[in-house]
Amino acid sequence: MSTKSPSSKNILWIIAKVLIFILCIYLAYLVLKPLLGIILSIGFWIIKVAVAIFISLLVLHLLLRIIFKVDLLEIIFGVRWPK
Image (cartoon, rainbow, N blue to C red; front, side, top):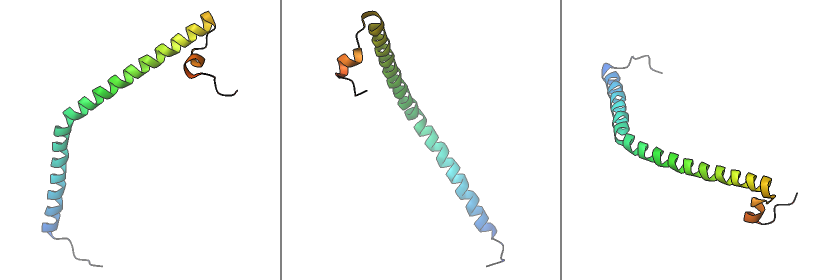
């Protein structure tokens, strides 16, 4: 174990590495920001369409069940799983 204090050159090198790291993170943010916006907008659009389809099928199933006593799930998937 050494009791020798770290040299100022070593400390300056560590500070330079930290500054380079921060600069690289900032550059990556600038490059990836538009790409992230495009990916998130496509993802939210897909989720919105999937939720709209699911809710419309759920409402259709409930209305058919209440009004005409027809089970839409049985029509689509066949015989239900065992009770």
